Image 1 (cartoon, helix red, strand yellow):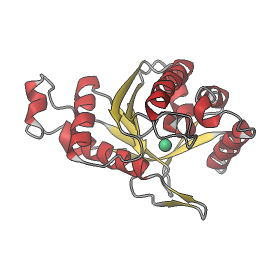
Image 2: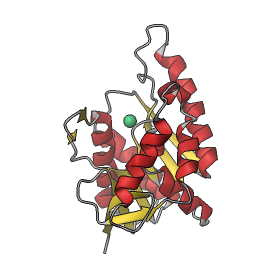
Image 3: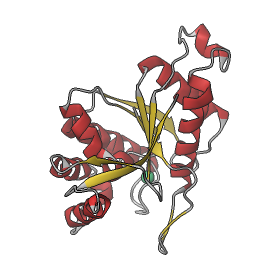
Image 4: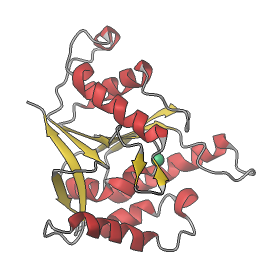
Length: 226
Ligand SMILES: [Zn+2]
């Protein structure tokens, strides 16, 4: 299960891993927290209309990667908070789909390099995802309303946190990097006209794989829950 803030986040970050796992026969579920409706500064584009476009783009990207299902939580883009309502919704998704692995962003990352402030929605989604994995998903009497929905506790086995400054696990995406790029290109409202997109993604994955004997990689802090 891949939990992200926005449509396109998974394609930018973990889609090579997603495509690889799907090819290996794993079932991959996406959970997208926000509607992506604020992802344009064009005054002619209405947020509600953009949300429809971005859902279609995310569905198309998921099809390219072999993702089995995309769950949209529909929170408003740009103002996501790691509040109990979001934690409950993510706990519900984990108990319903019962994933072995949850993939999410690093909620502790405020800065990347000297030129990028991490989007607060990314931090909020990662924070709520980790709190949903533990303790909410596996603890019977947290969110008793989920028990009333018939959702029994579920223990996630592993967490893969992307965007962590000191990763401890690398996934070789040499066979799926082109699939990742093709999926990312489905997000036309976000990356349309971005000339060096493919080169940028390849360079990023090359950097991640350097020193690991991998041509292209995605890196994670992997936590194996005992
Ligand atoms: Zn994003």
